[in-house]
Length: 58
Image (cartoon, rainbow, N blue to C red; front, side):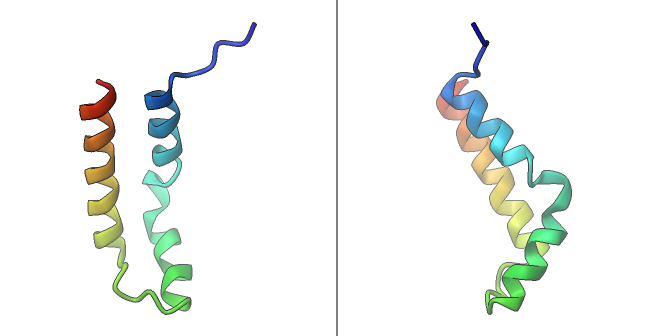
């Protein structure tokens, strides 16, 4: 049987996929007109999200 991560682990892994490439995520968002979502803003949102995951799932 495969050892699958718990819900908090899955959320953490999904969020960390974007962590090293926040700049690369901001560029297409800007091209779609979401210019307020700068790399700095996305980094702050990611950090807030990770904090919330840790608080909820320990």
